[in-house]
Image 1 (cartoon, rainbow, N blue to C red):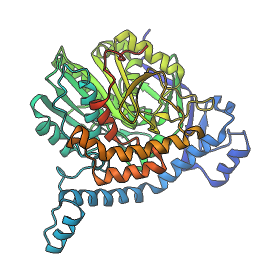
Image 2: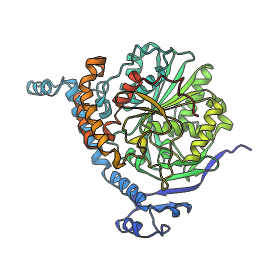
Image 3: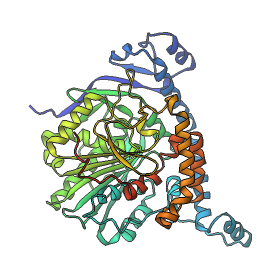
Amino acid sequence: MALKEHVCDNYLSLKPEEATLIELLRLLFSSDLDSRKFIESSGEVWKLERRWILLVSVVAQWLFLFCSVPLARIGDVLQKWLNLVSINGGPLMLSLHWLSGKVIEPDSLSSTSAVGNLDRRIELDKSIKPENPRYKAALSMMAAKLSYENKDLVQSVVSHHWKVYMKFVGFYNFRNGYQGRDSTQAFLFKETQSDPNLIVVAFRGTSPFDGDAWRTDFDLSWCEFNKVGKTHSGFMKALGMQPNNRWPLELETDQPQGSSDQHPQFAYYTIRKMLVDLLQEDENAKFILTGHSLGGALAILFAGVLAMHDHEYAWLLERMEGVYTFGQPRVGDEKFGEFMKEKFRKYDVRYMRYVYSNDLVPRIPYDDKALLFKHFGPSLYYDSCYRGKVLEEEPNKNYFSLLWFIPKRLNAVWELIRSFILPWVKGSEYKEGWFMRFWRLVGLVIPGLGAHAPQDYVNLTRLGTLLLPQESGKVE
């Protein structure tokens, strides 16, 4: 008999808001975790030997919880200043406009996020047509990058810049019931140039000044579902996991999710309902899930929860063209990976996991005996010359190896030099602004952060040497 609800029967849950300094210190010196108020577990976690990893996770979450308001204010100020500089033609022109009292104020259509200021490109590469094997990856990455922006800007770009074959469907804020706030964003659009038509779902990644998003990233809580495996609880909560770590087939509510008189609540249920409606309207269309960073984690876990519910939604999985993620962190253990590979083979779903050079995020959480997180499927890995390889795992898989300390920084120096060379070789669309160049300087100190910016992921989908998707598409 088909399950109507998947319930987590083995779990580790961290609650940083309930942690005290004394209990954090006791965590390092005592294996008695049962008495810790900020840790809940079904028991298996007691076997872990590296309790310092839990300590780092709880402390990091506590810091982001404490700093979330000032961090957001700093982000607002920085974003406004970046947009003022941009719309007024640079720092010098902004100064002149200020002296003359003619400062141009950005509105919602000209105001981009901090991530958007790193790479201000909004146009699709017109040389990459739907028949080009790069097309879906290039379109997915631009959608993933655009997801960081506000609703007005997203709608304007899709409707007026990508307008010929694109139809904007909607932009949504979704509820994280465990944080008690709307913390997950995604937008949908329909592309009508391809045959069959494509519906694209793009999840927003981690905004640099969103403390709650960073809490999700650092939350090492996990939950294990029967016959599915362990998954990252923080990402599952952002996707809409219900209280007591449950994924019921349908929400227990009187009103259907996504109805016109109801504010969208949980990402998984609302988007699934929208896909059902859109795909029933167009019987030949397929859909793509995509995201950068945290957005990539939400994209692949959306597919994972849908696979849990395949007894009712097998037809929806059959209409899934693929999942395209960029700089995606690990989301589950080896058993979860085997579950996903079996489902993707069964429903012929393409999983394209792109990793650029020394990007830190795809290398966390750790793949080791303590955390058990593992990627599944091939790594579509690109070096800093955008040369692509299909690998089982990206090099330096846990990032912090001392053997890579010098090579990573030498590579960061090359990336800074390359930023001046690339526009001369490939054209003005590859020119980097001053803010991206500043971020390259940050990358000299922390190479993994500089390499995580969307700039290089957009570039690799356009310039990368790997032919996609025929040579590397299906999970093996």
